[in-house]
Image (cartoon, rainbow, N blue to C red):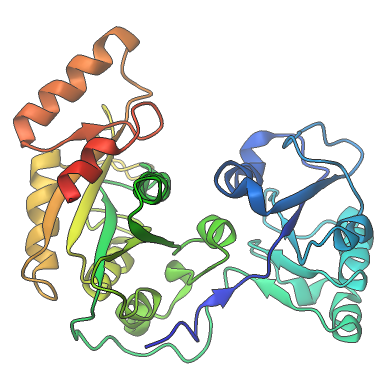
Length: 338
């Protein structure tokens, strides 16, 4: 099985911030630069944008001359549409020979004149939120190589960052590891992947199988989780991803002191021990040998002088390494994995 049905982006990147002036709406740009700075040629900002990724400001033509191959739209506005103020830059980028890559709700082909310019220049318009065609139904067949899936007690608890941190740590140790992206920002960071939350339900497990194909026995695919099986809205995609990934190992991701599912009043976030048991029980359908190797905690809500005690107590309670990947790294989890 080969990755013929994943989205694949051409690198290096030129990052477009548009006229966005709020870092919250430029999380994609900051994520790409944080994790794949070596793939970024420069940035392009319109008047009114005071954000700075620390990259060289250059036009699309200058970036193309410098070797860039994709023009990444790194920001999003409320509503996810393409403002008129961006149109001329998008046309310039396509005309300069750059693929245009976006994760907006709107579609690039809807930008007036862009499809024609792209066709004439022989470049692609890539809407990352649109899954590739030809995805199969899951087979449940065992694949060679090893897989780790980051799973959560809720949405937005660090599944992407944990998987990326694990990849970095494992590669630094000389291990064979590949981050497998399942969301729009992750795909732009990795340069390939499948937007799992946009896949038709019947094909979610099949998409996960395609995303993490047969590999060498000592190779680890580190699969970015989505949603949570405890989430009333997104449990379906989480379960399909769990079954299709057939993970040999899982890492539970959690935000300290979060008690209810975000934006779903009345739905509690389960205790971590219950989460571990639930994921292992559900995961045994396609991998009877699944195990939990650690817990990744966002401790931003824990007082600084209490953080070490909090993680230590949790680790003792669960019998698992518990870390904040951004503050402590994920070394103890990789130790447990090995």
